[in-house]
Image 1 (tube, one colour):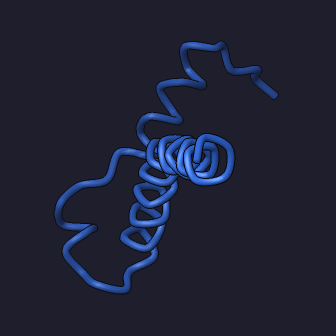
Image 2: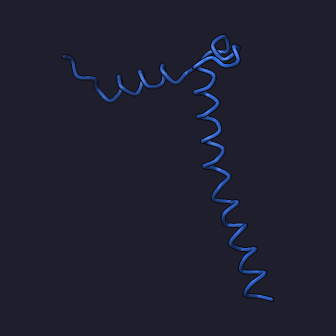
Image 3: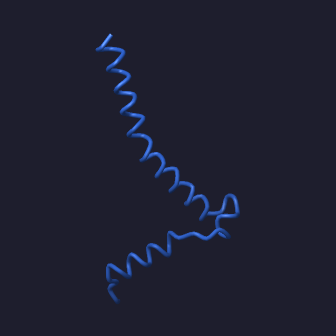
Length: 66
C-alpha cells in the first residue's frame, strides 16, 4: 500500500469536503445534509462562547452587583 503524504491527504480532504452547487441543490440529499450539519456546527462554535459569556456577565450583574 502506498502511504499518502500530508499534502496528498489535505488535497484529498479538500476534494471530499468541496461541494458543488448541483449537489446541494437537492433538498434532503446526503451531501446537503452533511453540509448543513457542518455549517450549523461552525455557527454554534462561533456563537456559543459569546452567548455563554453574556449569560455569565448577566448573572454577575443581577446576583452580585445589585
